[in-house]
Amino acid sequence: MTRNEAWQIVCEFVASDSLRRHMLAVEACMTAYADKFGEDREVWAITALLHDFDWEIHPAAPDHPMKGERILAERGVDETIRRAILSHANYSGVPRVSLMERVLFACDELSGFLAACSYVKPGRNIFEVDVASVKRKLKDKAFARNVSRDDIVNGAQELGVPMDEHIAFCIEAMKARAAELGLAGTAQEQTVTS
Image 1 (cartoon, one colour):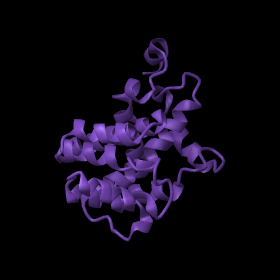
Image 2 (cartoon, helix red, strand yellow):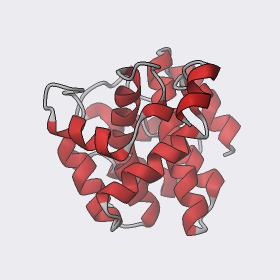
Image 3 (cartoon, rainbow, N blue to C red):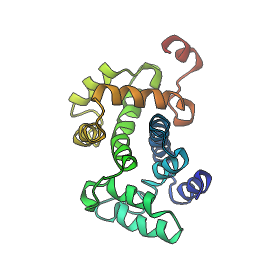
């Protein structure tokens, strides 16, 4: 499967622009980590794009991602990718063993949280987000309350990367694709803040 074929599956199953942007944000973070660790960028991109492809048809545990995994198997998606997708759900019973599995888990909730942090900045862009402001928002339980703080913390720990470093790395990865993620603000704001 190619990245473009994975994106076609996303477009087939996902109508929500915000959910599509979430999967693209996870892809931005994961492919940056793939480059950092010398891993297969294409495989990591496909995994990121497909990890929540079934959310609109199976929006709750235990259906997501278990029922979605069966659809991916029918579509010929590699077992390694399907296993990583299963492992990103703590309740799946599939432990995170590979580096790709740990990176997917570490980037999933954090990328959503970083997008939320971007939306509340004056310019509504990722270029205004920094580690200190993210850490302050993580302490505010009312902010982005559906994002699991435990998953963010545990993801960085499982990855073996200090929290500050992980947050900074993902911010930079998302900045590189800000326009595609809907986090670019205006050109004037980018010049001032970047």
